[in-house]
Image (cartoon, rainbow, N blue to C red; front, side):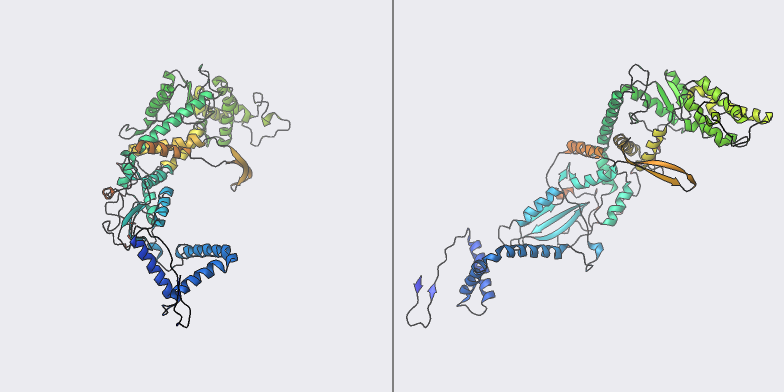
Length: 555
């Protein structure tokens, strides 16, 4: 410390501050900031500028120690306000259509945050600015440039799997497992402004990236698990006394045939049956009975294999009303026929006798009626006038003998139904709507997805029971079950197997990845920092729903 000369009217002292810098550039940066602070605190006064800077620093550190914590909280709050003001609330000051969206992985987002907080080698402030923003499907590819030294870094919002962006493949996987059609996905993504991949890219994922094969393998595992579940069921017997017994209602085998493979629609069901039955038997199940809709050819084939043939009860009674409408109260006869199938004890001879007893019941003769029937209760009064005319009785009995159930009593005596098959066909419409003709491979893939969805969520537990009343039948109250929420573990299983089979590269996608498989920006070669719109439909956009030739499939 040096003291000033005695002739000066005020005291002066010189203060030496020791410091070290890693480079000459860092020293010059510090001096520039220090000079800027002196000009801010003591403009036009060079003599007291340094003292003003030091006094301001000491006042903030020493004179208000009790407010340090409050000051920190206010600083944090002000920073949060700054972030919210800059990106939190949309005020309508810009065109909403210009605000494009993109998909980002959590891992890549973390790498972006850690990269932005790292200063450039030139230690400039701010360090990085956005030089270009380009979309690749749903993925954003951003180039950051230092405004001082012009060093650049490239960041993509997704990693790479098998030469393609992971996020784009994940979105294709997501809309496929959700049952969406490619056109529905494209319109949704296009309208949301989140980027979109074209049909060529989707087909590449399905075929070249082995996605369809992965779906088939996972579906095969699902059906094998269903077979093991059947074998563990107490209703299953390896001695051949029982079949699946409709206890698990899972899908254990499927078969599909296109029009090219089988032209005749009337016999396509028979051809599929001849494929799926040996397939199920090969899985180790002992099949002894087959229930189906009314197909005489299937009946012959099943009996040739030594199995029991059964017709669906609903298909057996659906035409009864039409056949008997001119003769009698057909709906009452339909109810009686269903009751006879349920209570014949599996005896076809008894079933025919009970069907013919319907005529005696309507004549007022209740000797052969069941003891549990209302007509056996004291005080029974029939709702309809009894049959007395011989011609009417003869016509009614002849009509009963012509019914499908009477003529095929040996196939209806077990009272089987295909209710669960029809339920699966109803769910199948989520993945395979009838108005769309799918390519063979696409059809099989979507069929496998429906099988996995059904096997995972079939027979879910009920959380509660609700009653509802049909406005057409106010006196009739029905109860329906509120089931637990569906699960979709098969979706994660497909994705995990797909990733394991396609891990070939984990590097950021290079410029040679920018091919025609994706919807590219208007000018993909521009890196001038302008906003680039990627929500554009190219001329070669495939407009078909299936990405292949028109073929209609049957299962």
